[in-house]
Image (tube, rainbow, N blue to C red; front, top):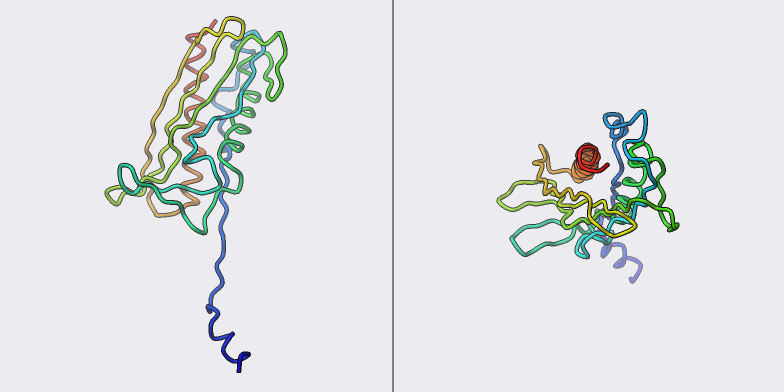
Length: 192
């Protein structure tokens, strides 16, 4: 009798988890690649700091001004801080903006420090709009005296044409690359 009851208790459909990646679009560096370094000197790229509400594997959706929830069966494949740190390092390395780029260890002869902080990384669904939101700040400072040389801040919303987390991940990746590009271009006019 138990063998007849147990199969009836199981759901007919099994739950499938979906995992999404944050990664640089393939053409992200092409528009800023320098023939010669814009900055003579070595830059250290620090890990991206992501606000605690967005730092886990869970993807956040904002439904009200101060309320978020997390998707149950849809997650980041790699935590955003790790994925965006790799993307930023690769972007700076491939762009040729500095003579040398390092990450993960400190040497005495570093000239610049590059820091990134992400304040919001979420699907914004207030008012029924399904938008990608990325709010961040890049900072470059003089490694010798700590003086901030340039700060770039952006709070981007991009409405998605369909309710798709794959499109959300793709859009956030593009927004991050766009802001890296804007940062490097602006940096060229500010820091020498």
